[in-house]
Image (cartoon, rainbow, N blue to C red):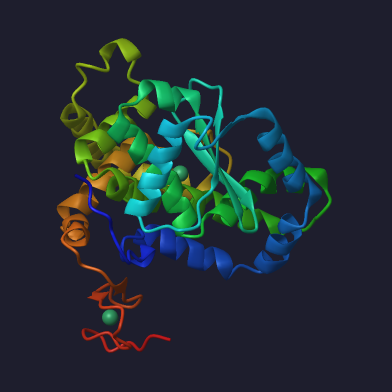
Length: 297
Ligand SMILES: [Zn+2]
Ligand SMILES: [Zn+2]
């Protein structure tokens, strides 16, 4: 039986890489200008209209099982603003969240629905809901459109390049936070890992015999051997095929978080926020960190 994580604040589980990358992104020159421009750019509205006009709309009536699954995951993660749900015909195991201002749209690929077990699918749905809960959607949209914006010359300037790099880097880092939300939604580490393993490319005929622990060994070995190189690649390259980003690193980071005890602490009912200075968990009603003394607003 899954626990409902009542009063769950996303700052308690957000990955420090995600937070740091977003903070440095927001401090770049011209970032607010680009944000406002992108938000009002017609292309984005067209994109949303196209998405809604091409895919299957999931409602209580049209597809109750999937609809309920999304709603249950949202309830587990204590999210009350739900996205519109669509499915799209594609045998990639994936899902994506996009949106415009307060309207978010969750698109789940049919491959994810057909090829996943229920807990694995809940993990994938929880991952996307995690992007919504942490307010990632706007920046995802920006990351998606900035290349187009640069090449279309509607907004020019050298300042766009650092923003593009910053967005691409943050985009990859935000996956770690969303993976934690996915795990909190499905509450089953093996299912989370096997979902990531399927995204990494294990063929369907081996689904029933694949062992997530062997996959984890691959992840440990890979990070041991290439960890430093990976960090510099993901920091410095803006255009990569990010549709299934960095599955090995994601599995590795997710397990590291579970091993830290923070995941279990949340399941055990620990709530609160995290001190931005020292990282300590602090109860929501406290206005000062008991460890480092930082005052909260
Ligand atoms: Zn994601
Ligand atoms: Zn502190």
